[in-house]
Image (cartoon, rainbow, N blue to C red):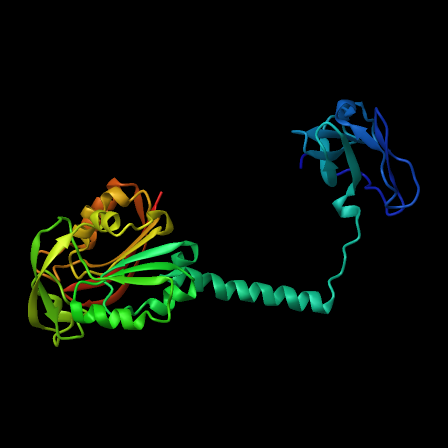
Length: 334
């Protein structure tokens, strides 16, 4: 808004009239419908005299009323409600400050407050939910399944799920747990970065949850009761080879979840040819050497950055002062 304030604004009983060379105060009932003008006949405000209002079109989208002040060439611009159609006619109505405000009913005010409060509750929950990405996913490949603890979560979002678990006994338990989930399927495989490579796989005493191809290192500083109780020999294969051998339709799976106790980087290296299918990758990783020779969060960051992934969130779920922290890290393909 520029210029000085006009001596008088139109009063309540004034109506807007439109002609090819000026907009004036014609008198009449407030709210009288203005005439239509075409874009080609838009008036130059300078042609309007003192006491009249001119108008113009800004970028063929907004009409503004203006009044020439008594002291010369300064102009006061006032916005008004308009409807404009390119190539057609512009419907001109009275400025906003001339229109009576509609009072909200008590019910409307209550509903408005309820909506605002609901948004204040839901938005922080969305930002604080590490699994919110599943709402946008079509399917998940979960490597390091254990007994399928997330089966209900995936079922909630009606996702197609491929579970991959290397330990034979735990795999049998997984299959049993998935009987009520027809869209979720289990496979017994050890996924790494090399096909047919032999590994010594260590099985932990906490139902296999901390089992790994790596020896325990600082892991025991956070979970001192966890240890290995036995070891078995398994052959590894890449995720790309697994998908090809099992005839997996990768177009159905756009999220990859990894929980392989230190070997996540190896799994990712063997799955790099499948990254074009994965919009989301979620991995559990630490920022310290939990297992001897394991990958850390920074290693996964570096690899996925090369393939166009950005870190969306990093949620801490375990830590110890002087040692480090464990995180669930979510990446999204850009």
